[in-house]
Length: 450
Image 1 (tube, rainbow, N blue to C red):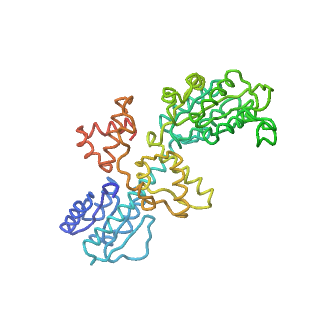
Image 2 (cartoon, rainbow, N blue to C red; image 1 turned 60 degrees about the vertical axis):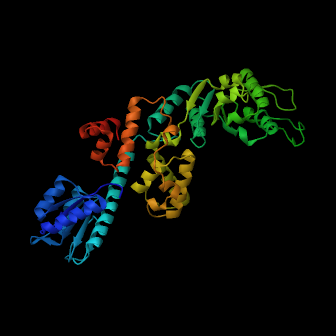
Image 3 (cartoon, helix red, strand yellow; image 1 turned 90 degrees about the horizontal axis):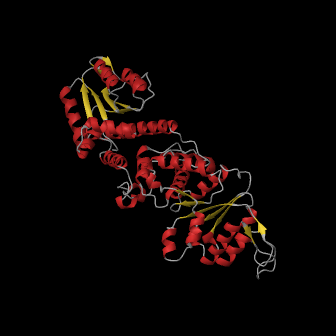
């Protein structure tokens, strides 16, 4: 079970009800309440919405199934109703209704209640998730998706920097979406109607990289069978994005610095100098300052590239965005592959949120797309996830997140969030583990939006 469920037991046999209540508590940790009449059950449901109601078809001579199902449909739409014994025909319910014979052994009753409770909690969490997603400002920002504070900071940074002519250096791990940030900078600039050209510096050997960037004339080298204008000229008036700039050879770094300073290029094999007006955006997943120290990257080029810096956080540092991203990728995969995957179950989503994601957003997108194709017309369940995802236990190793630089409020929020996850949402238990009062914990939860 993902969380403790609340079970309402409606029976005239108080002793039997108490025995079942204790069995539920000891077996699965569920909380249960025993009432002896239909009116008492209705009042209990109005006071606290249950996850499962267990009853006979009649209690105290009054029909129980139909009135209980009707109220549950209005105030506890995620709940399930379990009727033990004979059930009169002639009525239907919108909530799930299960039946067991009166002679069913205790173990079967416990197993059935546990299963109904698990599904009820999953329905509730999925509904709450969808309501949360609908209420968040999840509209893509020039193709970027995120409601985390770090992403909102990036959106603001893009809006400030994009209209300028500053060269921008984007830092971040592989798969975090650095090229999307570069594209957003282009679309928010006055160059948006001009070309956006992207080049991966690690994808070409040094000689070919020079030709790709600056161009060449026919006959400049063996394979130069025709003129090639190069990416700087192709991006004239627009934006040139150089990914993995840290892998550029030193010889090429000198030439790139000269182009940035003089704003002119000379194709290989030519003496013709051509002026270019290009906004350069570069990206890297390596520490360029460390590369400078070991003389693998030019310090003057680093300063020239880093007129404005944008750091894209890894996915593990913006976990609140995982539901948004997973839902976006699910819908995109449905549209791409003609599938009808209905959603992502709450326990599956919890596992996705806990995973470390070394491949970041690229890894999440690939996984969700694969799962959508595999399940096709049903929700993605926990058992559908690979073992490496289901087996995720810790949110993030402390040394990986980097506690240094976090505010005390950020550390406090992190510890409360992790403790709530460790206790499966049991706030009373979490308060004890944190050694704070329950009221204090509730206030902190509201304060941090947990």
